Image (cartoon, rainbow, N blue to C red; front, side, top):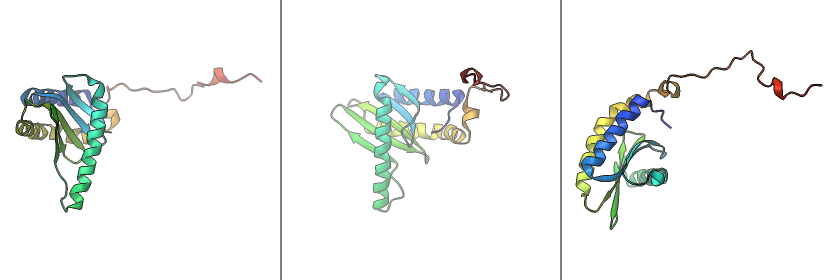
Amino acid sequence: MAAVSEEHGEVLTLALSDLAVQSEASIVILSDSGGNILAESVGASAKMTPTLSALAAGSFAATRELAALVGEQSFQSIYQQGEEFSIYVHGVGEHYLLLVVFDRNTTAGLVKLYVEKTALEICPVLARVDGQDVESAGSGETFEMDSSADIFSGLRSET
């Protein structure tokens, strides 16, 4: 899972919020290819977003395998249309997915247009996220333990 600093997280969340407004989406999620959520903009209940993200990542992985079977290097997106809601999943770089849930009042073309625009905007941020480790993404606070301290001394029985 990618480590996202607070600064990068804010930039990504703002980009997803803009995407949600522009595309009139109810849910926008940025995840890694394993379905781990990096940022989200959720108008509805957030309870389902981890499951939604994980299932979309699995579906996208299966789609990549389908692409290989028909001789394509990969497919960049998946569109699933329902009666009330639709889902659009778009690959961003090699490791990330943008997932958008929108209702029937929004057109898929509008969503696709704004997803592609957002993907281009966040690619530089994701490249920086790829280059940082967990420590550099943290709050800057470190935890150190005095190695000379006998932390288990109270647990030993006196013999």
